[in-house]
Image (tube, rainbow, N blue to C red; front, side):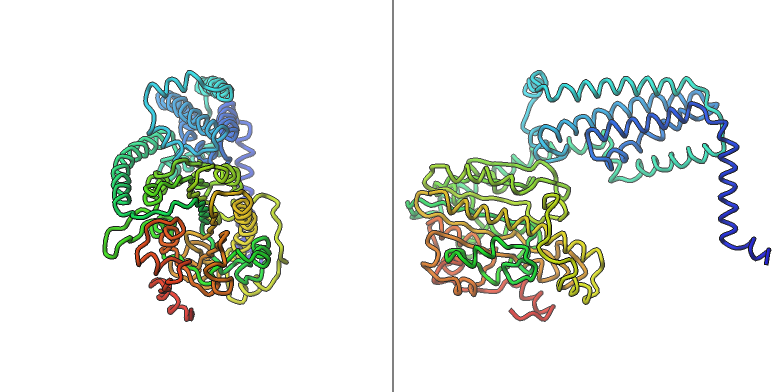
Length: 562
């Protein structure tokens, strides 16, 4: 029985723990100031970085410097320790500069270092402008710079003091040094981390600036050609005053909207408005033909004006027709800017953070929209591009947003019955909370359009660029080109003339596809319309619906009859 106990797993774990404890106890008296300084330097670096950037990023950056600090603690090898000291001071200088610059960008512009805002600013400047900017730094820049300089001097003094000490050899701390070096080597070897080191960030930023300048040259030529083509194609243009507000959502599927029959009350304001406002219309069957943003924008804003001819740019058409174009964006997207925002007379770029980690709330578009609606121009097209329900969903609604549905409701039970993972159920909850916030924003854009007096006719349109899967067909919540949710979008319409062509029930049964949006906007704007425009304009009496091929294919795959 005793031998069995000694061979048991519990006994082995206990003996191993005792050996480690004894090793630490034997070595504890050998702790010298070397390791106190190393841990102190690491801790101070992380603390300073956290003042400027998120905690996760701060720890990630500090991993690069650890290996140099460990070299300083290498006993008996003075050249190696000197090399570690020089590299540590230089690395620390680069890291301090990086986090300080990023901190200043966050504090003053709410911008990432690799955001389009920063890249465009660098691409559109020169040496003289840069020097003038540096000479006129606002007071808010001064304190971070003084703090960074002071911190660098302190850290340099600590590093030099570390080098002056005589490190002792200790078995436990050899293991600890190997562990720290392993973390640092991992950071240097992992490419997605290595590019975060200041030299990597600089090379990446330099390359992005050069690419931006080249793209500008190419897109300018393309856009100028599009404008020339638009002027040649346009014939008779309506002289009637017209205001069109186009609100474009992001990653929003109608399958999980209360307005479209979803059981959770995640669009209470839009649902009530639909029930009480006879001019507020919706299409029950609306589809995008693409499942990603850039391709969806291309489908919406580039269209065949003449059968078999090259596609035209809708924004160039409106520009050529004399419309004032105002673009309000809560997304930081280079491709959209250079291809479509290029034609805008006024741009409000409100989000300077890249992609999924952006925390810019869509409420930021409301004041610019109010300003745009007050513009006295007779004919104007206002495009509002929301960040909508772009993943991550938890960043798409303010803290404290509360659900309007019980935790263990029919939706939750339905997902469980479909054997959806806890992660899918959790993301579905976040998605619905984000939709609850979107409900307020979309509703506000509608009411603002209704309330501000316009010259002529005012029209408001809302649709999403594409949809997402929300756990209905797959164990997935997110972008999905292979399920119906990826294409099923909302389409909402209001006009002072709504009901003139067809009523609510007719609008519900009139299907809509986003790649025909250009024809609807051409029709609304009074631009020269061809036979194709009349057949594809949702509001035209001659509208002829045709189901998108991608929707037909996926519907058959999942046995859905439209």
